[in-house]
Length: 415
Ligand SMILES: Cc1cc2nc3c(=O)[nH]c(=O)nc-3n(C[C@H](O)[C@H](O)[C@H](O)COP(=O)(O)OP(=O)(O)OC[C@H]3O[C@@H](n4cnc5c(N)ncnc54)[C@H](O)[C@@H]3O)c2cc1C
Image 1 (tube, rainbow, N blue to C red):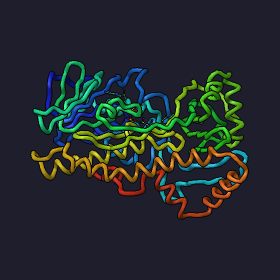
Image 2: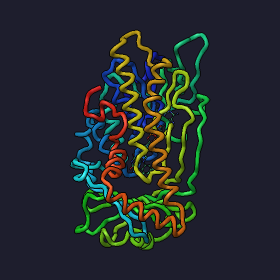
Image 3: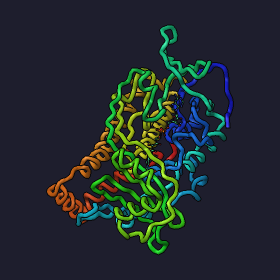
């Protein structure tokens, strides 16, 4: 799994964090002629891998195009399951909304995959690449600019000092490197924890529809999978989530059944329950001197709308496009860590990140508010939304990762 390890090096880019986003960036940069190192603290086959666990990831249409361009599709095609419809509703209210792939003129809105399957396929591919230097297990413990080495940032990995022109910080929402760069961040704890588990639905009702249900106690998502298996993502206040983890399987199934109703028939065969505390983490800057912050390190989101990895993959695809274009046009004189390069990236990404954060956070706040008037307004809003093709198309395109300036990879083009 470890390609090779050398004592001291010069790189064009060192990627700190080989999670779903950092690993994808490494794949995208392979073949560019840039000298790239990928440093990951936890081996991909470890059960402790924080990025590739049993969580289910809903891949947007745009993300699937990127993964295809990265050559990853053949390795994951047997593990993905298509989503053709998204049904949005609120418990106890009359309005519902349906986003339908056919209505949008496409075959699928996206696919569902287990994080572990995606991560392992990604790393199997990284290991095949001769031009990506891998340090794993390896942790970037510190980073500095050195006065007598202009144009270079140092990344410390165990007793080695990697010299690089650009440090890509992709170490997740709790990023220690973001802080080490002096980049501030804000965190808003939602006071909610997501409880994730698999259930089996009535085979006659199983299909390709994902359900997003807002309940007075928090949002609930049900994502379809192979053989009638659905993944439940139930967000509840932290103390109630603890109760959900401790109750018996039968009690938990009853609770989910009450929240979703019988659209999927009777739920049974509950799998292991796993909990994720939920917060919104945002970086105050996307760049620092010879450094760029991407993925969850830039924006850790509530999983309610399934946007975190999709947004992070757009970061990776955009950064790769900026770097590869510079390398192609300027060859040896190209400096991947130059301010102008980093600003071009930041300007590209700012609006998409702002929109997705506002959309996801807005959903939580809107559906988190109680009261009869707000509830009726939400129901009306959803019912109206369902009859408005323009509004639906705009939301569908955003959820599918097809709005704003799209990357070449998302458009199915090589870098
Ligand atoms: C319950 C749940 C459901 C979700 N569902 C969806 C979904 O349906 N769709 C979607 O798009 N997103 C979803 N997400 C979000 C998605 O999982 C994340 O956005 C994504 O994993 C972020 O990837 P990342 O690589 O940026 O960060 P992380 O996954 O946090 O990975 C960071 C990596 O950096 C490594 N690392 C940390 N520090 C260092 C260091 N100093 N040196 C080297 N390596 C280091 C870590 O070991 C880790 O591998 C969900 C999240 C949750 C919790």
